[in-house]
Length: 167
Image (cartoon, rainbow, N blue to C red; front, side, top):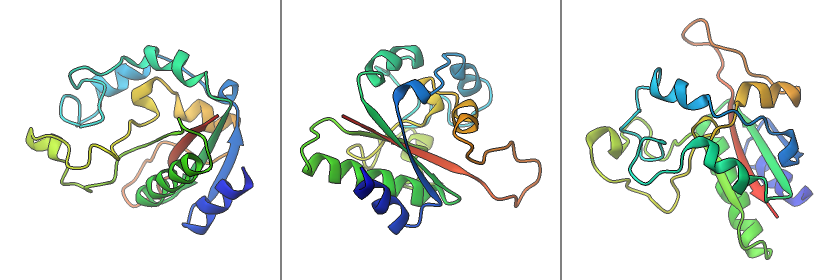
């Protein structure tokens, strides 16, 4: 597992922390924030509103089957996502046939195809965010003593989180 932490840090992550699924705070109410507060609702390619998507509370039993979760923290959303993909790939090549990464999507920047009512341009890499699968990211990272506060002013440093679920 130290290899995966090193991958995250080498790619520019601020922190990488190993936890268990028991350290993750699941709360299906996250869908309320998606439905009534997210500009991507019914548009985002990894959004729970997309046709055929599982609902947030349906993810929990699936994710609890993993033994380890590597939480990746960065102040750059692209770095968090890039690190999670690299770790997922490395874990697969190391013999974990079902690693699963998740992060807020930064693949296309502000040009998400879903916002234009088009299919995802990179469906092989598109992954859901914490909140879209029923994870309370604020409560989870607070338990881990990692930084995350609501932003009050434009230009404040953002904290982004990705996770890689490992067997």
